[in-house]
Length: 130
Image (cartoon, rainbow, N blue to C red):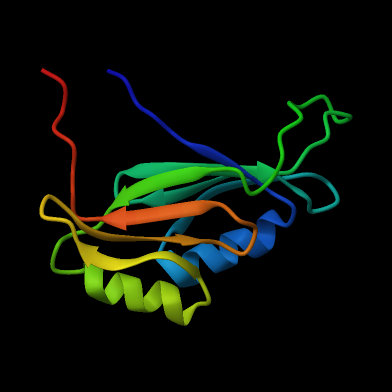
C-alpha cells in the first residue's frame, strides 16, 4: 500500500485550520500542540485523505526550514458539488486564481488561501496505476 499526505507550512496554523474548514470543508482530525498551545503538527481530513500542516520554521527549532505559502494541492470534489464548493470558497475570502470552468475532462477552479498556498479543486480523479 502507498499513500500520499501533502504537507503545508503556515505562519498561523490555528487560523489556517479554522479558515480551511470554513472555506473548503476540511475537518480537524489530529492536532499536536506544545505546552504553550503552539501547533506543531495537524492533520485535516478530506474524505478518506489527509492534508498535514504545521508552523513555518526557519530551522532554528530543529525542523526543516521551509517557508509558508509555497504549496499547491489538487483535491477532488464530486461533480454535483463543485459549484457549491466554489461559492463557499469565494464567500470565505479565497483569492480566485482560476474561476470555476469546464475544461472538458475536468470542471474545477484554483484559489489561494490567506497565506498564499494554491488550492485547486475539481471533478477530475486520476485513475489508479495498474
